[in-house]
Image (cartoon, rainbow, N blue to C red; front, top):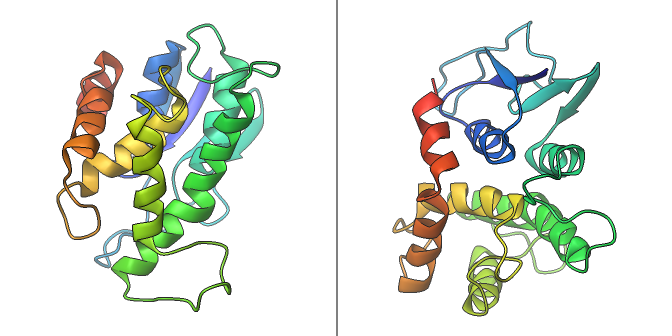
Length: 197
């Protein structure tokens, strides 16, 4: 059985959502993490090398970081079609969105939150407004990042956008609001949020 190391509320909540979408058995192990407000501490029972979440264990394998967990789980449990499998035409776009989330989107958002603007071309990410423009342009052809098909990439983006929509970091536009609503109205999202704790 999959074990999810979880600290509510945090990035690991989205992995509960993913596991519910996949309809696979799992257990959560609550751990403490260091929080931005200074609360929390490293938990010796958390196998993540930096004491963060999410991390999962499956058949003796440790997988951590949201995009890696999403790729691993959607490959291991393809039945519900939450991630395109090898050979599907959208597989490359799917993997690109997972990498874009962790390699570009989160750094761009965090840079903006911390009022840090690396000189253009010196970092592997861009300004947050460029990310939002790219995601918005993609969703105009939507309704999801891969077109008509919901995927684990939407779990990563949808969970983050639900958190920040309407705040200075993420403008509340009809397109983004409709996208967040499509994602958060899914039964698995509602079940995951009810289990977040």
